[in-house]
Length: 98
Image (cartoon, rainbow, N blue to C red; front, side, top):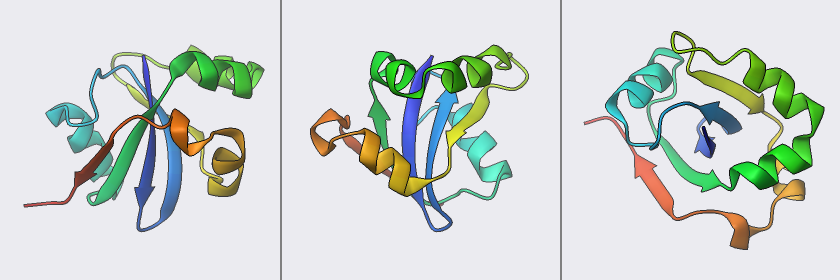
């Protein structure tokens, strides 16, 4: 499992995915299907996400199946930025449609 913080035109999203990388073609297609085609992403440490979201993380993760491999943990950007320091963000990845 990986957690990615996505900064898109509709606002920040913290997502949980079974995909190993934010640039995975299937993962990108899932985002595109949800209307997210241009974004900046940072991976957040899974253990820190688990610790800071507690039971909410476990509820979200419980419903993650192969056919549903993208789940939103948080869509409140203010909360995400309050919970995580910038030095906890992984390297940035920028994506825009070709």
